[in-house]
Length: 357
Image 1 (tube, rainbow, N blue to C red):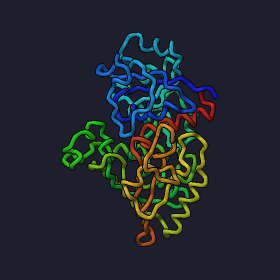
Image 2 (cartoon, rainbow, N blue to C red):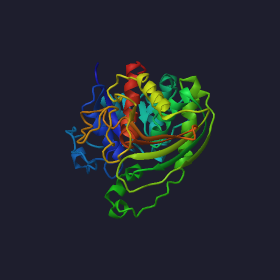
Image 3 (tube, rainbow, N blue to C red):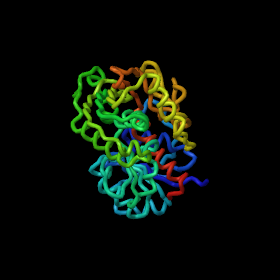
């Protein structure tokens, strides 16, 4: 398979650099261009500050392209760019992504700009992968990072049990708000705004949208009320959610474990970034040691440039059943890997394997 020439839209942000990190040795895609804001446009890539904790990989020393340049599209055309991975802010993405899509470039977006828009698939592969083939505008969207640790375990439950209500409380990492908080000692000490305006509403809306389009009819036909609240904490990476699921009927911890194992067995995917298992079951979640999971193992010294699976699984623990009808668990995922760069590249991998472009 020949590698498809691609561009990363985002030179200096966390997600843009995660995309660069994951694409440099990717078997399906070849990093041929990176674009940036006016602060980075015109610089060589090695002149742009590297903000990830892992060492900067051996990136090609490209000149960062200016998104707003008149010759931007012609530059991409001359490079043979076929695919764009977007880490743009929503307002900029709303303009640039559709511009690229109309020019024939396939856009895989981590932005909120086109999520839930008609003709634009919003996809979690374990739940509604079939939607990838139903695109109309050359744009594919990954979901909000907070949704992944909720939606994937909940989908497994809804396949087997009738759910009536879901309560979720999130504890979201600083990196979810961008790189600046990671370099702010006050924020690292816990002195930051803990509120995340609009996050609970956005997460709820995307959950319902994804479930309504689920491939499994039990999930697609599920109907439940929700109570979601989201909060920022001083952890650098990793979104933790505490979830209570009220069901009709009764269940046990053993039943729920069996449900998760059954879900894992039915969700094997051979794409490079797909985890060994989507849900990694543990007794108790350790936010320090369980950040980098490939579904079977935890990495202590991760190298996402070469190991595309690490950080892609949802870790589920602290499982209990209350009053025979309330399933309580914690779930944890890497917000800039599965919840952002890794998740959006996974969509592109599956699209390639399905010969969608």
